Length: 266
Image (cartoon, rainbow, N blue to C red; front, top):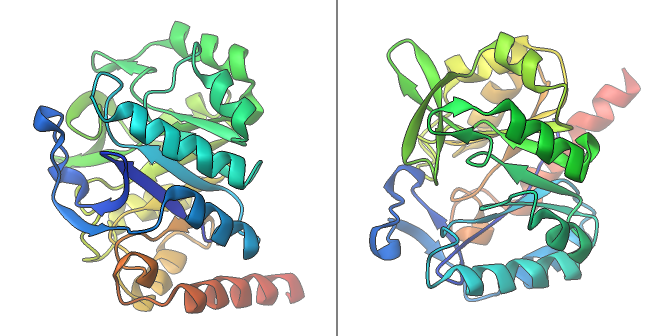
């Protein structure tokens, strides 16, 4: 397990929000935390602590009046920690190069590929051909529907017809370097992980997967490690003390790094 930090940007500010509350109408969301520091501050912190693979997410749509402010925050963070962070939010083959040139290690994509509720293989192939498989992360953020987890797009507001399954992971892994999976129903709630989803992801043994959503305690980290067979990386947002939560950032780093050290010795 690796700790993958996050920098979520909404209305030009670094924030932690309740994921399911995000709305494009009037650019609103239920806020857990609004940072006084800018995105570059958090990027430099993660660089100092040598944490790689974290993600910047632009939470406003490209047509929002706030998108340009989000983008400038993101570009400043990428320049502050070149090669250390991934970026997602409105990524297309046409603009991906700008973010990669600014210092992103990978671009993260959902809505461009999962258009109108289904996978568009032509778009996926174009994207992979443009940026390279080794620099593409597919965001399979999902919400519970009946007995499964359906991928959601457009800032977690629209359900697709595509369910997160081992078969889908097999199919998409040919095009991506990693997967990012937000459990959107519990995102920002620090109320516990989606154990059924985590078990499914942990049973699959392919490219790296980062799980985000619901982690609110070290007991949740233990459960994530157990249910995910120690194959999943983790993002912690609202629960982290950096963002107003109760889980000390430095203790999270120690937890993960001690676990990595035990694995190395084993």
